[in-house]
Every structure is written in C-alpha cells, then in structure tokens.
Length: 176
Image 1 (cartoon, rainbow, N blue to C red):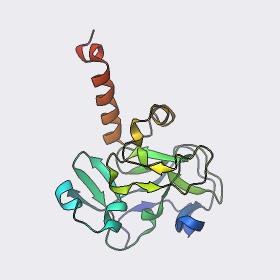
Image 2: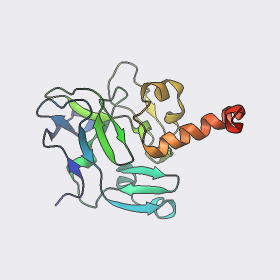
Image 3: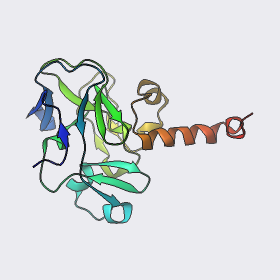
Image 4: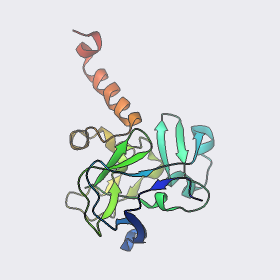
C-alpha cells in the first residue's frame, strides 16, 4: 500500500531519457493537489550515510531534516524536475498544480522549490527553453526563480528566502 497520495487524474508512464514520470490522464485545474508525499523523517547525520537512491528521492523539510521515500518504489517518487514546472509545493509535502494541466502533459516541479542542499546536484534533462543545465541546492537563491515561484516554494525554502532577504536589508530587520 502506497504511503504517498497521488491524484487519480495522473498515471506513471515513460518519460524518455528521464526514465519514468507522472502524466495527466484528465485535465487538472490550477490549484489542485496532485500529490502528498509521505515517508519517514531523518536527521542530516543519518541522511548523509544513506544510499544515493534514498537521498535523491527525498524532500528537505528543514535545515537538518529530510522526508525520505519508502524503501519500495511508489508513483509519488517519480515526479521529475523541470525548469518550467507546472506544479509547485504547498506547505512542505504537497504538490499543487500551478496552472491548468492538459491530458498527456507530464506533471513536474522545480527541485529548487524544496531543496537547499547539494545532495541531489545533477545535469538537467528537462529540455525546456531556458533550462538551467546544472541543478544545484543553491538554485532557490536565484532572483529570477524567487520571482517566478513566489508562493510555490516549500515552507522551509520560503523561510530561507525571508532570512536571506533580511540579512541583505538590515533596515527591514530593525523595522525602520
């Protein structure tokens, strides 16, 4: 029995060079929750010694906490990264349609929305115009992404963005 939720309006299918992905089987309206990630939570100390597959199929939910996928494959682990995503993060564990998603379209999100560590640095295969090429744990700091994804970052990344903004603007920190 799966630990995570995935909408009945999507299914696993081949995603070409990316392997497998999640694709819409019916129109998904903007604002629809398409997945809720489940699993176990581990501290950075344990996380760093896990096998690569477990680390790369996880979500960072706090500075030192990570939500791990289950040991067995399940559909929610197959949401691929895109530099032009159609889904964003709600809270820390929900995946929500940012816009209407059409039948046959792959559901994806930008991993910059949820991760701030380099445990999952990789060469992007999304093929989108404007693809960043190399995906890193520091991508959330990019001003163009902060603007494009405002309201779609995880709570954890949103707090980091606010913290960074305060550090850059000491006047706002003092309330002047």
